[in-house]
Length: 156
Image 1 (cartoon, rainbow, N blue to C red):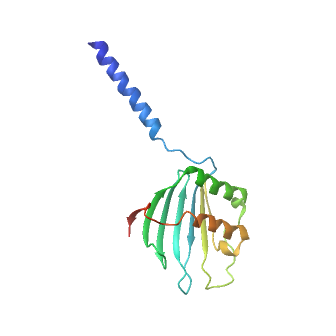
Image 2 (image 1 turned 180 degrees about the vertical axis):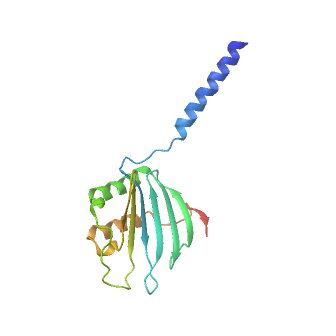
Image 3 (image 1 turned 90 degrees about the vertical axis):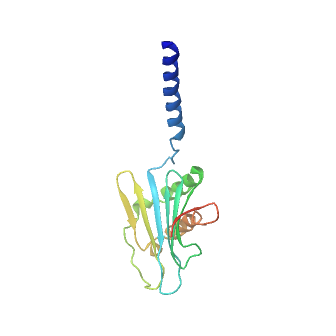
């Protein structure tokens, strides 16, 4: 009887460890932990929204003004797709960019980045006035912001 009880306890412990390992989220292999990008409004009807992409594949979209989908939405993307994006940011050495680029046109919508690493956060303001690759990277981030029925709305 003691052997059966001990066997059952060991079985539950083993299953618990297996379950915990199975639940561990896969993450992207990158120094980058997350990417935050905001497209700011202009004096007209420019869309104002935020896209936050985690190294686990979780993407959060916040539609503020002049967007098709207002509110906060979440979706889990394949880490393969997120890996490609993070690799693209790394390839362009985003960590060497200035913190602020001079805004030459006041009415132009802006692009703001916040790149999180394990030990720091790098902000890039007015990225649309920086190197061309910053605008191209914004288009890549935008590809993660196409809200459809597969997204979960978490608040207005």
